[in-house]
Image (cartoon, rainbow, N blue to C red; front, side, top):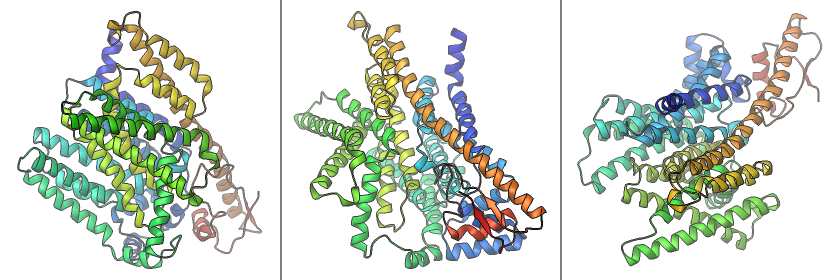
Length: 549
């Protein structure tokens, strides 16, 4: 038993990376091509000159994401299984590099890194299908959202490693450029990460920033400019259909739709819950401030944050189904503003407390993570196009935030409280008795034994088991959904091949996917993709497809 525990402590992160790769691989193995995949797949159908010419045209007319779409089209030209494996490995990379960013230089504190890796792993299992169908489990989408965030994680890890050990200095500017030269959201986040790092060294520590970090800032800005100053950006801005007319009207519309999506969607539910509860735990931990001013601020923000959490909980459980956020009254909007303001302030205040008290080995991390989280959403306020996929960056930053803080509360009741709330909010009442078992175990016979008793540790373990079960069940829904759709998709391909062998006589009969949520757009949902779907099936453009309901 002791050997097994020692092995888990030494290899915990590696084991969790492997589990995430395996579990996400069980989903990606049933992911096929959708939407823009059909469009970009034609880039590789002719020769190298055609491939390059199409990318040049794309840079001038579509967007500036050169590296992203080069990679996407390359993978579209290869066997789909290569991407399926690659995407699962990339998702496992978040566990590896996320835990390294959080644990910092604490080589002796393996357990802390293991807990961080565990929380990141279950957070990936909590990914909501409304977000993943547009970003994670879709080839083109994954290179626009998953790959850029992993590049940011790697750059962040290298930046931290250089700050602590002065190692791998020549790689950092390269990674700064590659991270920023991906997509608009991540390019600005890469620049923001570098600026915040310099700010902390220069203005807080009162030290001179390293030349390498300054060079990395320049490299990240150059990478960002390749994306945001591409000719296609200005072209798309002039022709993109906005949901409303006028800049102010667009701003108001986006504040409504993006603000309420961020606060009240099922996508954000587990991440906001974990982050806010962790932040309130920090506020409570440092409730005994030395100054009267600090004491008043702590009490007021703790009270405001706690009230906002309770109102959010009520909104998510009692009100959500009956609310149309686009038609909200001024009173409702003030209520939402109260909730949003409380959440933002308590997350920021807890970050400041962590930094001032050096609560964790990387005390500036929560402040960076929460700044990048909100920044990734604020930059979308002027965008005429917004979707659930744009929440992916915010989700990953919130994961870093609470994965850094929550392990510090494993000797408190906090995991039990979270376990109960997660079971309730994810409609798993049959798990609540298990949460009660955890609560009973966390009440030892003598209060002096509270932190270190075996019984208490078992209670915390049971609480985390409850959370893990809910996360696993959430992930299983995607596994089953994609597997069911894959059967129909593969039957459609087989039918098309038979149609070709019969000289394409008559109509080609195809069956719509059983559940539209487990896949992105198909040609029967958007006729724009019909000619590209025909190219993918290798049938004639004038062939008629009968989508049989």
